[in-house]
Length: 227
Image (tube, rainbow, N blue to C red; front, side):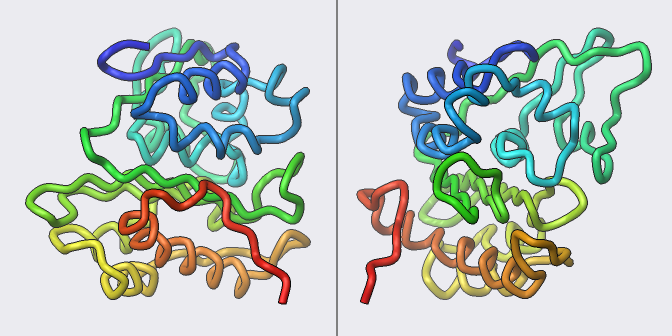
């Protein structure tokens, strides 16, 4: 970890990335999300490089990498994560390459970082829908937005329509709703959730960006209160 960001070796466990984020105020919003990745055993043994190499659409670490424009270092070259993930469980790794490390750039000062995970169980479960967003501001408006989703397509993917709807505008309830309406996904139905539920959930997470922005004191996890 340095002024440029976090560099984590491909064989480092999730717990190492969690500790790095928890110990750095710029990355701290990701710590609660990483604490829900799998179980304690998985966080101690599973690796970020393995999560990336499988190119799973519901790999919980991958939305963070996409939202931060992370770079993959292989034994032969460097490439953005966005170019590394090709399709369902397909990546750009050549037969004679291995993943060496991943670099996560430091977010811009004042950026809004949001990491949300929806799963059938609160703990020890992979996500049905996950969203990680990095929204940068300049002059009171969104200068750049990177919103990445897991569980919404054949691979983890950026929500480019929603990003475009926010860019150049103030982040308000109305602009967040317009961004949510601009989501350009065609999710599948499976036992974790129907396509209709996934779209509704994803839109709700995008709409909640304005709430995270307006009320930074909100707890990381929000639970429904029984009637």
